[in-house]
Length: 387
Image 1 (cartoon, rainbow, N blue to C red):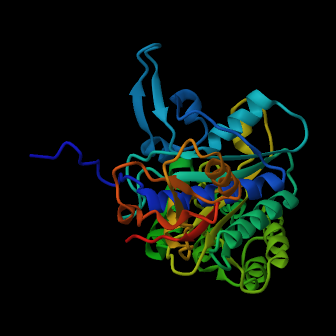
Image 2 (image 1 turned 180 degrees about the vertical axis):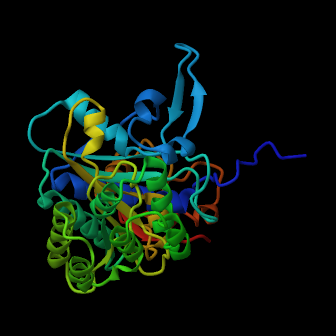
C-alpha cells in the first residue's frame, strides 16, 4: 500500500538548508537584475491554454498540464515556461513604446522531466528585453547572465552561441514543408548525420550539403569564417553570421563557442540563441535567445530577447556557501534591554531565536551556535554553552 505522504515522481520537497540557499540566490539574482533596470513582474501560475500556449510550439503543449476551469468550462494550463507570459504582459498590459526590461521568478510545472535527475517543478528565473531589435540587446542579456552566474558563485561560465536564422534560411531555400523542417530540427539537435542524410535525400545538392554541414560547424570563433566559406551566400545567412561574429568578439577568449546546430526553442526563437555551461554540470545551466515573433502573435509585434534558468538546479551545483548560524536568546519578554539588543542584532542581519521554556540549550544546536548572556548588567553574544 502506498504511503499517503509519498510525492509524485520527480516532485520533491525543498528542505530548510536547500531552501535557504535557493532563497538567497533568488534575492541575489533579482537584485542584480533590478540594478540593471529590469522590473519585476509576477504572471499567474495558470491561464487559459489559448493564451498560455500561443506561439510556443508543439513541444510546450506536450509539457503543459491541463485542467478544466469549473467557472468558465474552458481548458486551462499550468505554466511550463514563464517567458511567453512575460511577452503577453509586455504586449497587452504594459503596452509601452520603446525599450522595456522585465524580470521574473516563479515555479513552473512539466508533465515529464527533462532528464533522469531533473525535477518536474523547476523554479524559473529570467530577464527579458523588449523593444530593441539590434544586437546590443542580445549582448546585454548575455552579459547580464554571465555576471549573474559569476555573482552566484558559479565561476566562469561558457556561452554556446547559435542562430536559428541560418537553419530557417536553408529550409526555406530548400522549400521543405513544416513537418520536414521539424524533423530536420530534431535531427540537428542530436547531430544525427545518418538520419539527416536520409531526410535530405530529395533536396537540391548544394542546399543538402549545407544542411549536412551545420551539425559539424561547432567549435571556436573560427567556425564563423568556416561557415561563410561553406554555406550559401544568402543575405539572411550572412546577417546571422555577422550577429554571431559581433557577439563572439565581445566575449573573452574561451568564454564563447559557436554551434550552428544549436536550435533549442526553434519553434518560437527567431534569431540568436545561446546556452550557458558551468564546470561540473554536463547540461546547460541557462538558455536564452531572441523571439521577436511571439509579440506579433499576441497582437503587437515587439523585438524580444532574454534568458532563463532553474534556481534549484543552480543552487545544487554552485559551491556551498557557509550559512549563518543563529543566536539563542532567553525568553524574557519584560527585559527592555534584552529586547533592544535582539532588535539591534536582527537589524544587522543576525538570526536571533527565542529559547522557548521547557527545552534545554543542547536542543537548539542545529540552528544556534551562540547565545545572549547577561554580563555585568549588559547583554553580550558568547559561544553557546550547551552544558
